[in-house]
Image 1: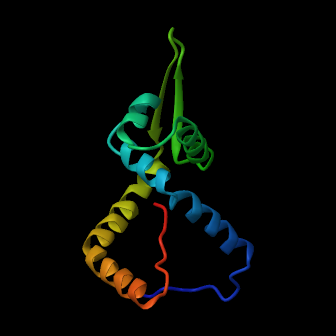
Image 2: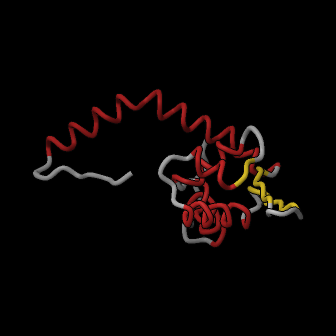
Length: 131
């Protein structure tokens, strides 16, 4: 596989790509996309399926994904209000790379754990990341 790396990483194209990758690489965004991959869900269903996400964070992430054209929000004119979220065709096109990334992580988690342990053992103070 050949990867082309741009010479000018400060170019506007690179900055725009970086913004997109920041959105789709967010922990919650990935989980939301995978939750919506099979069919539309209501807000409360998404919140139930994603352990640990706050209502505020779910709202912010859904709005960001909607703004980027990955999620469609449909409001049904009924009482009480009924709102569903679903992936757009663009959002569905993201599921394959996300699944591939998840499979890569599963295949290499033991190697990553070993590398972390070796790194931490060589340091005076281990580095911890809040995940």
